[in-house]
Image (cartoon, rainbow, N blue to C red):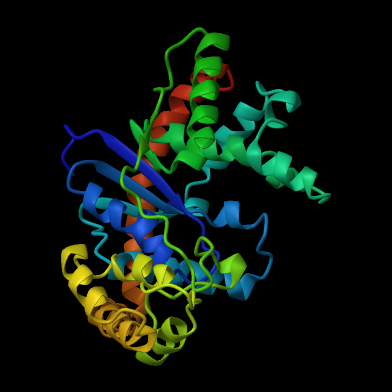
Length: 319
């Protein structure tokens, strides 16, 4: 990989089947950005442990995430693709960060405050989530971290932690990353009009079969009083040029079934090659495991060098 490129880091939690909202919201941009940046994309399996505690499901989800990203075009020759847990230096660094971080600071985290507000009993992992995330980001000297507006706090925590570590130990060890706010990111509505989300059970899978596409699209909620079904149109414009859609929707005012059928056809044209690529990749799991192992090896070269410097800086290294 070219060393003159800036470094980008992104993590993906293995928490289940991806949908078109995930694709248009972040996945597609990662593929586009790999041409410009030296990329590290990790599968955040340790982060997922805060909510997923089923070994078989975890293993399957990890492989699924790898398949998903490779199928849409993430190139392991351009981007280091690896599992978070394969780089133990990251959890070591998170502990060091814990030792300079106050509980009151962690109590400001959105995820923690949201869990408390909902009356949930919060695990230590959820409470300490920002420090593991900061270690993920700072370990690789990331210049940029692509996030949506609602995720800026993750990068702010990493920046604060880098600044504090550098100040406490009087050494410029960690680079301050910048959030790369993804512009023009589509907020994709689900079949009920709310933001598409697995938790709302309103999602259309990214690698859906033709039958799944038909069932999902025909289930999109429509406003019976409108000439143009806004939820159908909002999804349709992701798959077809809007200039062409205006003609189509004008010619079929109020004809919801015809418009849904047109959306089904356009979605199938878009999804079919992705689905075929993923199916082909899934026939050789050993190839996926090899990509992850090679990615882990590359990531550990960077992480081990960084940890040597950190250990010397905090004084636990006697060599």
